[in-house]
Image 1: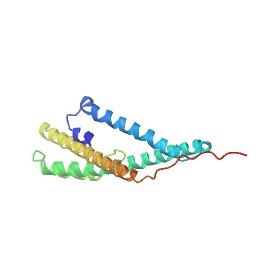
Image 2: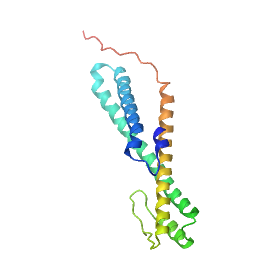
Image 3: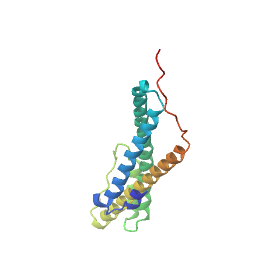
Length: 173
């Protein structure tokens, strides 16, 4: 949440550092506790398998989360650029049409574009650049808020994790 609040066109590493440090601290703390919960629920003889399954599921969840947030970001970016350009009074209608059609033909996933907009007018180019930067910031914020919602949902679900008693190894005869 803090990271999304700090994102701006003029943000730099120094302004984002506190939020990123807090984020890293939180992820590190949660990962250690989740591993502890998983490993305390299995006998010591199965700790290796449980640890491997835990790591695999965490990697799968991370991959799915990145894919979802990437889709949210890509969708918001194309929409926001188009909206910003259409609402910009410094961009002439013919340029708006060219940019909008170029964006609709762009594959955001791999960054390929069929057309590149170029203008000899520096005012138009500055306006388009500003519109794209604003779209990047607002799209990043949207993806960050979605990430925050998923984390909050996970925290709520974690309240319902049953308490597990430590499983002891069966005594061998």
